Image 1 (tube, rainbow, N blue to C red):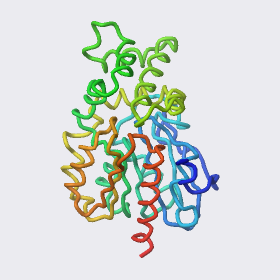
Image 2 (cartoon, one colour):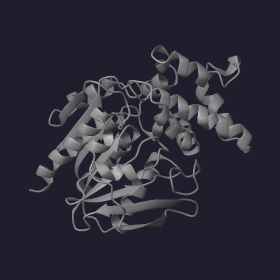
Image 3 (cartoon, one colour):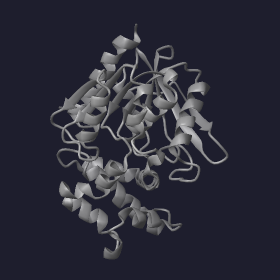
Image 4 (cartoon, rainbow, N blue to C red):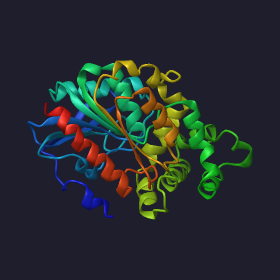
Length: 317
């Protein structure tokens, strides 16, 4: 199955710009689709993953006003890979600033992986600004999930993990995050770039059910923002209180929601989505039987497009 055949047709933005967030950070944003349609916000993963033109294609352009943005330190936002003044509370405030700037009353929140984390955190802070949620590849931002990424993936992808850990001297491999942080934020590009690529290629190598060299190359292309932001956020438990997203679920449980999770997602294991679905029984829970973490796995793409289309029935009322 060709992922491109599943998605909506390619479209171009009808508006875009750079929004100043503070004296340091500037956010890239764009809108496409129907200017008078139902607003939907695409919240990218990572942290640090950034958006791509293909992300517009999850949404019916005749029905939705499609909003994409790059979070602080990611994609086309500037400065890329900057950890200063960069935390979850600030990202939530940035989303609200963008909503007000675009004069949007409420929007559907679409987020995968870290995008599911930030999407829920935003929704719990501003539930009256959300019309619903489509969430994929659930990451709840807990220390156990961070530890799984850094160490647990070794049980499934030992070759990728050995390349990842092998960048550090043996004495530093008991604390991979500390070793990577030291080098990722070194002032010398000859130091930080190889470690950024190693981090990003590790994640890319673990993100699909079957090997996908093209996806790994894509991860390497956005290496600096992805690696620096993930390491920075992981070092601070994603700037969330323990189990914050499940503990505050009452704030958004009344809103329509879809949860899409691949059975063989190793980056964000299905146990996270199972916990969320059990805590949110009104949400429609879809398990994709034959895929890993990446949204570009054809069956995952098909499932999220179907859930966004299904959500149109709620939003059109």
